[in-house]
Length: 510
Image 1 (tube, helix red, strand yellow):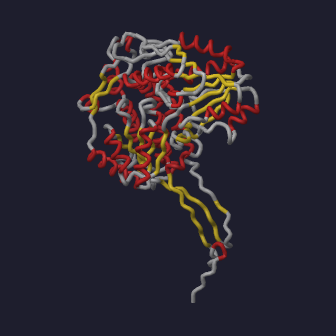
Image 2 (cartoon, rainbow, N blue to C red):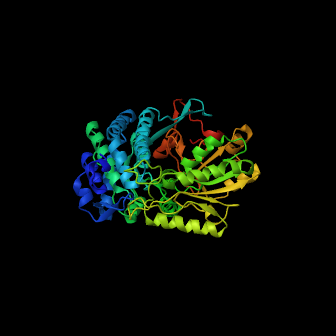
Image 3 (cartoon, rainbow, N blue to C red):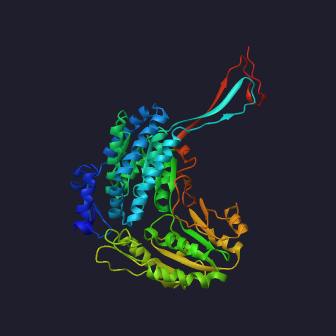
């Protein structure tokens, strides 16, 4: 369905998509929590919220479901996730469009987010037959030592607006094949896509046939509902995506009751352009990394260090790209940059630009753009040339601001690169093997993601995703991230007739 062709409102199109996906109309029309589209500023729903008591009841249901689900063989659990992948394929166009309506993403990024959901389902299905432990050498004769992995329990998921459904799928697909149940508290800014995703999973559950009731629960509500999830004793793991400020609250609350946390928080990501870099390649990667999703990715490129020998070749071209990039309604145009999520994001961007100017920054772009929606906050991405890192450069502003700085010494630029609190994603553009290998070495980038000749954004699901320092240390998605959703047991089996003790200890009794 297309607004331009059908000449209907954003709210009407969102409602039509939700109806098509099987979402109960009462859930988004008869509630007390309004939802708005950043595309036009139009209200697109009134959602039913849950009370604290209802949230606790749903967590109890999820716990009961877990106790049955953990006994289902992992390959069979994988079958549920395979069916979810099929349902997502069938719903890709509709769900991708709803992501664009509710999060403001351009069409290809909305569809790309759903593709990411499909990809993690494919990954998890294969993983359901590969939840391997180890056989470990033992010092005691007639013994065998091994490790086994078991389901953990209820997995709480707290997601952010900028990837309203992909982050849920990273956690849900892994948790389900690991034998866990899931309880999801989505962002208050993007609840409609959560309703749609739950409806899609419900269809997969119906096809699966014998999954325990309550295996997946959805909590629509504000911060107080998130606190219920974080504090509940039957939620042994919470995966929370959001700001570092949020993580400073969630982390200690979980630690207080010895629960696990997967924290995916802020990212003040940087790139380095070296003298030998392919500047054409670098230009394209920088442009997408810094301007894509209107700068509202945790992996957005926010700082760029350019060697003085190529600064005058690259930066003028980059400024030209900033001046010419298309900004517009992602539902009715082929613009590359859509809206900021709300007025608060716009105000934060303008505040950071003003502060950068006070530190000597020279700004290209950053102004609000009129696209015909008075209540939508569209901006030209801002490129800010700075002589060095100062003021707002050290902070993550969730908007399309790129701070560009010259450098001339590789050791010094690595220090500058690492001199921020967050440690999520990073990149270097070079054809010098020594520079690229140093960047990836122990004394190179201190980020969880370090790339060579590609940008900071666009991670694939096959690798573990996450970062260090104030990014939180959590890992989601690929590689061995599945282990966080399970508990490990070390087992020793004595098949001899003797009882030798470890470390040569002797303890003989009559």
